Length: 170
Image (cartoon, rainbow, N blue to C red; front, top):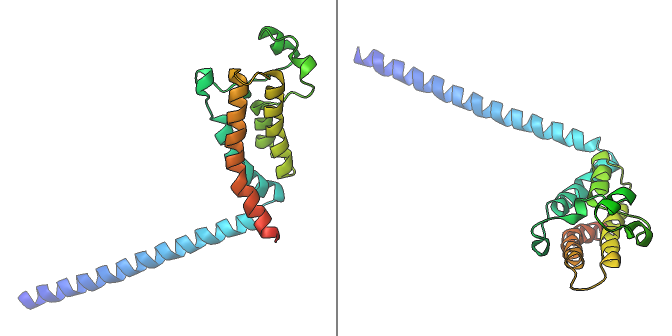
């Protein structure tokens, strides 16, 4: 009887070991399949999709910025046009700023994947800063300070991207 129990336990251990090996093999196979599927998806990725993967996290970081000098507000998300400038008490904004730009406009382009080059994205962000500094030209103006913070953050975010792209060209 003891011998039969020992043999049954031995068979059970053998079965468990075989099941564990099969489960481990299934896990490896599923992981390989997932990796292959991701590789194929990347292979059919359009240039705009690839570009979008580069600039979207940068955009999100800019969108999420809050400026202590403006009570943790981000004014660069606000659309300023003829009507809103009147509502905001800055009726001359559209006379001074020829091409308004803000993160809401950029957000639409990011979501639509309409940027054809990284340079277009960089130029739009730069236009936000340029417009703000032009309209709020006093260096102690809180919007001027916020624009400089935005530019500094953007340069920090975009620098490694530009470096990695230029490294690939040499």
